[in-house]
Image (cartoon, rainbow, N blue to C red):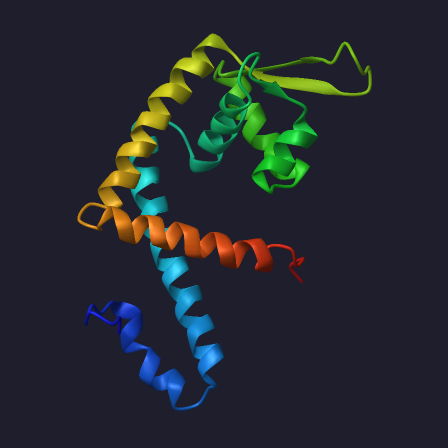
Amino acid sequence: MSDDGIRDEVDALVPGWTAELPPRLVAALELSKRLSRVSGLFEQAIRAELSELGLTYAEFDVLAALNRTGPPYRLKPSELSRSLFLTSGGISNVLQRLEAGGHVERGANPGDGRSRWVGLTGAGRELVATALDASGRAHLEVLAGVPDEAVRHAADALRDVLAIAGRRSAR
């Protein structure tokens, strides 16, 4: 329970943990469960918005990553995979669907004959703009009623956690 008496569904799990586990592990489990729950709420809201646009979450991720690069809105597939923390095989299917829909195009890299570029088309730029608006609405909907200060504090605290924990490779 927080200092101001606010409770969430994870608080119901804590007594069972504290009876058997050391305090640092209980705190880690609370963090993990809350992160998972908040992430799930965001993802559920975003997926609902994206489905109305005919996009999967993975397709949106690719379009948004390409859009983030700025003009000319293109990356090598390997750069795209790294920026999305996906395997090249996982991204390949998504790129095929987006290309078939006319949202991305692939082309030869004039600077390196061994690699190709993936870039947004005009239709892809229009779709990603609409999808980014929809994603923004979904984020704000999930956070409706949460004080701005709490959101900022949580984001900053998670940066501190990720800056250290993110250095470790997953097993």
